[in-house]
Image 1 (cartoon, rainbow, N blue to C red):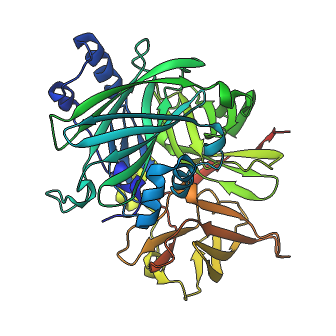
Image 2 (cartoon, rainbow, N blue to C red; image 1 turned 90 degrees about the vertical axis):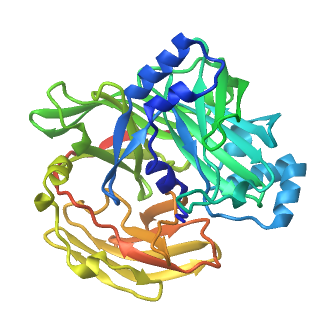
Image 3 (cartoon, helix red, strand yellow; image 1 turned 30 degrees about the vertical axis):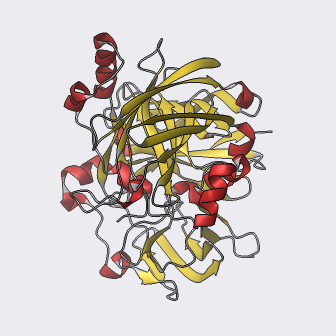
Length: 455
């Protein structure tokens, strides 16, 4: 089974017809509004696996294979501080403990117990952390041989049924009966939730059609407002004379970092555009996902910018991604050694023809962290737009989320081309392999960095 919960979720899809088979408290009009929003999903490209991902209002929650010792499970049930620490072990935000609100609201039905532990919201996201308990919950094997039971969560506001359009999800097994789930619901780019509102959550088991229930949760984002950095109307990034991207907003909050941007009206290939960030300390932040309703106005989410950054720079670039998807002959071809995986004792230099090279000089395992010491010779700055190393378990499944990945300059080295790729919260008892991250497209245009002062 895949260790990376994002891969499991990203490879899922949801049939619109299933809305009609859900027992719900919603009226026919409300269900229609939800279905209309479902139809507006955008597709996000997964650079590594070359597939499209459905980002929808209806969210599947599945199980990763992470485990916690039984002693943790007992303390977890009894102690809020331990609840906080367990959610932190999921790789979520460092400020989660300080800026989330404890809820502790439970419902039971048909042997299931759902407990909403935490809520956290800014003006683009609502994070909900919950526990799911049922005897034998995490021991079930479905017809595809996968472990665990799937759930669907439908979030909405009674006054705004089209507020949310996608989600990020993470899950952790505590024991055979208990699961932690953290879901971040993401808003439509043109909308913001009120400072205070009631959030309705409908939870449905995808295996047991009789198991469905509804929570109504009071949410406030006031706690985060003072800790949010928001910079508006930042100007244009020019890729060429006919293509200028307007950066409408940069946002940095305890719930994440994002930009809002507008593409030119004549653009009809939005999948070819992408971004990354770097800060004044040489740390690079990758795109996690982008979303839009109209394919002109977007929000892109990034790995979290560190709080001590004084400046952030936005890099926009354009690729020939759509061409490679429509015609595999146009995809970049790599030698076999670039596509292989290697154990963590193997140091290797990877050459990208006409671009530069990534030299793996050292690999260190430090407790639950794995660090790759790299020399990246990249004169045109074309190798830093995504993480350079792909980490897998021995079964060749991805084993990390972007929230557990850092990519930054090696400040202890005198070589300006030395970087560190660090994977955090890894299982020290597991065997890992790595490969260099290849991409099938070419970067055909790249803009100058747009500087943002944070202090």
